[in-house]
Amino acid sequence: MNIDSETSTLNVNKGDDATVKGTIDLADATTKASDISLAATLDGSDADIKNLTIADDGTASRAFSFTVPASELTTAGNHDLSLTASTGGTDSDPATATITVGDLTFGDVDTTMTFPTTFLTGSSQTLNRDSTAFNLDVADSRTANSPWYLYATAQPMTTDSATDTGQYTLDGALIYTDADNNTSTLSSTNPVLIDSGTASGSSDGTVTTTNAANDWQSDTGIRLRVNSGAVVGSYTGEIDWDLVNAPK
Image (cartoon, rainbow, N blue to C red):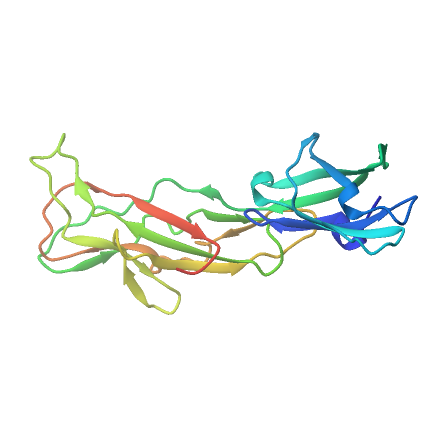
């Protein structure tokens, strides 16, 4: 039993199937394909095989193809596949392949973003973050040129009713200003594109990390717009980051 060189080391993205191809060398060329069975283990456990095809062309070397479904490949990293063919009570020596699963996840993401105390003047004003530096890491180990997109939404900012007289919703909102000075308002229903990129696609599942906030300056990135009707108080809110592998 042999696995073709182009599928003996496979790179797939999490959520994708892996297709394995190879040949089975038979002692009797007249053996029917229906008399040949194929068993697979993945990381030492029996693996599901889908879409198995074995050539029935009367040759001593039979081509085969099958799919390891994505449901078997749920963990990023390397997975060891072992195959054995059986016919007429005779088993082949195992053939092995390595399937490397790439994934798209968040890395180090700062959990707090603060803005300076300001005096309300009755006019709108925009506050920059207290700190320019912010970690918003995208960790990608997928195949080459796989795209990613990072979006942000935000709930309205409110006071803490336990410490303030009543609870107020800020007349204002978090905004995002890109490097070209284009500004979008963050809301709970309108995702704003923060950054995008593509995987570098190394062959060993190496994780490449991109800080999506690396180029934010004091007057770009996430900022806070306070409108003229804002009421005095200490306001907090939440940003939801959404990392996807296809544009919305």
